[in-house]
Length: 267
Image (cartoon, rainbow, N blue to C red; front, side, top):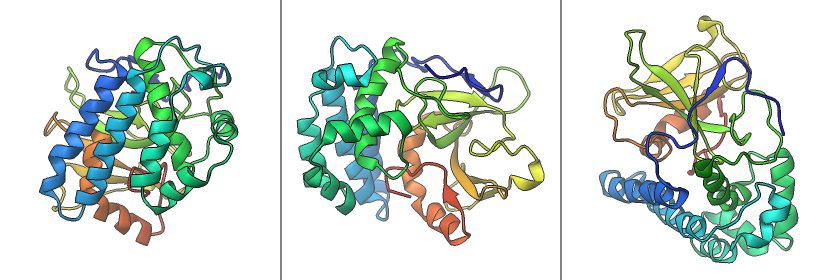
């Protein structure tokens, strides 16, 4: 098992705000993406892909039973074939190619489990239902955890959110894991990539086109996260709603910034 989370990270309840199982959580994401798709011509295609992916992941999660939290032991219990086939048929070009071409999927997944790879979208997509199922039952996975990674599974955050607090000390900042779907509270002024805490080196950027969304950048490591303001509207699901503002990601890339962990659009 990995080391405890560093002081800047405070783990939230693995069950989140609603006591839903993994399949229900993933289906909720699918429904949100489906509902948002008609509202954005530019993001419609990626939102429909997200809806389909979450729905297939929900089906896989609903079939999981008797997990040990050790992937090597659990691989035989994961009915991955339907999700692999769906990705091969409906995924973006590179993801679909990987799903069709992979000849040794167990080895690929075990390698990802051991060290992670921010470019391995296939492994991330396939393991999300498994890790989210572990998260909703509170069984911590037996995998390495790097500093500033998700305290539950060791995955990387792909989006942030700001939420109201009970006191008057401003909104609390949370990071959302791309791998297990949980979120955890962090300091408001810190880079989740390199740990930079000088406010002068942590600029934020926003645009009137996407109220409540901002780029949280770091001038030290040149990484960024997108952050969704849930104090304005609590309905958004950050990892889904951030797809509406893909233009902000394109702008960030033009400025020489790299997203800490790619979102579902590959940015």
